[in-house]
Image (cartoon, rainbow, N blue to C red; front, side, top):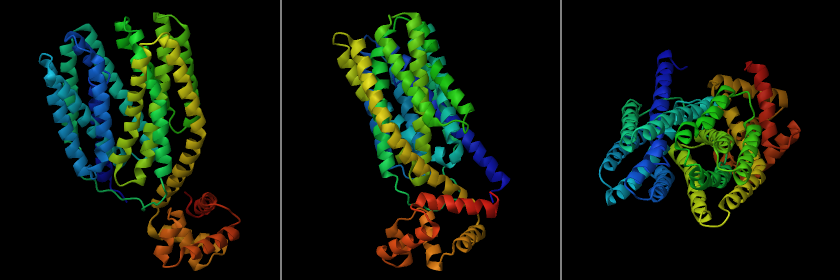
Length: 473
């Protein structure tokens, strides 16, 4: 049993991890990653902010993607986060200097190290957020970071780029201080080792994220610049629908089917691009398009942040899972941004942008049922494992004994059932029981015949029913 002291410590670490990441992510969104501060500084320096932004997206992608290759423990993750925050502070200070080659060196450096920080946070996302609360955790960090980002954007518009840069650095200093207070090691009861294969659904999810975020890149490169004349309105309102959608979803967590909400989000994105193609460039048009588009993007971001959170328990290296997953988000924005830069040089750019966006949505809608089925199978199995792990050893044995008595299984068959329910493959079962794979398959066939079932999914369902009746869970 976890003690009250341990519980309070975990709660404190949970809050600290949310605060530290929210502050860091706010700096990232306000300054280097398509932030108002970066573009204001570039305008003052009479240089192309789009070139700097492209370097940021590329550097951030690399940092996210490779982070898991050398960040494999929580103590290393904390060191990486502290180092990244220090580098990002130093790199941000360079932008107080006159424009020079140092700007390019600094921007790519802070983008790369920002990727390391974000991916490393995966350890704290996993260890201090229970599986059933990760959607709320993801929603919280996205909400808080965007609120701080809006504040910095507004100050940048109303004052100067240098003041906006100073505020973003102060935010980053806050993130560094909070990161110092995070634990370097976490002593928590681990779940049983699972062998459910995640490579296929994870790859499919990454491709899915990559494709859908092409529309985000188109937004940054084509849609947002089209309304650049409404600087005050865009600085205040741009992320408000995004935050509103996240607040609603966080409040309704556990009471909604995220798959249904995702379909609504796709319809909202499609409608927003159709309106972008048809309407004029006016305040009313901006409010309609931005409300639909950013509200939908809030749903999409929360969808894959929470799904990636579900994958974390299948890996000993959460930095790798979170880093690769979010790198696909960044890569999609990079591809969409490149496509948008080409489109803007063509005739009828609004029409072409909208058609491409609708093609992306159609592709995503074709992929989504397949992805959803894979995720349901994977994560439902995990829910069972989480629940079963909460039983002590004697309770687990009692549940298996009850199962054996009710279903008239032999000792060997119940041993195989135990391993099947823990996600072991036939090969691993054969190695554990010192029998051939064919023998395992023979026993599994007999088990399924006795239980009148055809799959492991049905086996889990039967066992959970008996466990519920015997353990009153």
